[in-house]
Length: 276
Image (cartoon, rainbow, N blue to C red):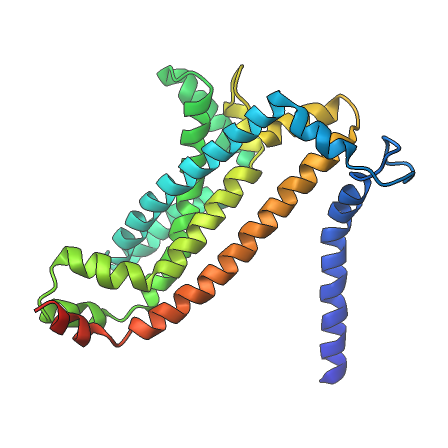
């Protein structure tokens, strides 16, 4: 048993090394004063200064953050509504069908989704740019939010909602004061997953972006094709650090929300007495 446990630990460490080694290698050379990735000559912050001095790049960064935040908020709202709707479908076969249709959008190749949106926007006359990128990001983020929220809804006991109604709660009160607090961890998970996917997306954005508007992923790809520049390393390192901060933030928010939900699970009676 101990031997198998030891081999499993070694395997996990190997997986993490394979995944993180290229990122650490890229970050290491972002501090290289030599200007190339062939030999580390000395420590410098020149490439990070170059990133922050590039006005065009900062505008692209702002575009990316605006798209990610808008897409995450809208897709979280739509995803929560969709998850509640699927959860309330009584017939199990219909619920499974809706969930399967939702999952198809997650497993579909990004190239197919991007090409489909390109054809759609061209047919209906939407100009490629901010609107097309935003709509596309919302579309592929909604199914992710549904997948994050639905398990929390499945964990919620129907008797909790019935108890709130018996104590005089309206349907709006049941939704806002019982259901949403219970599934809050799933909502946070969906929001952060949508935010991460939007920031990280390249394939879909490459198809639907137009002249005068681009995102960081497309810009990094364009610059990398022109030749290796350590400013790309610096920019990629900053994105990686930002993503890690999002993950850590989500972890602590998730722990906090779970503690609050567990404290409120049996408080339906107190809520009813307080609102009489």
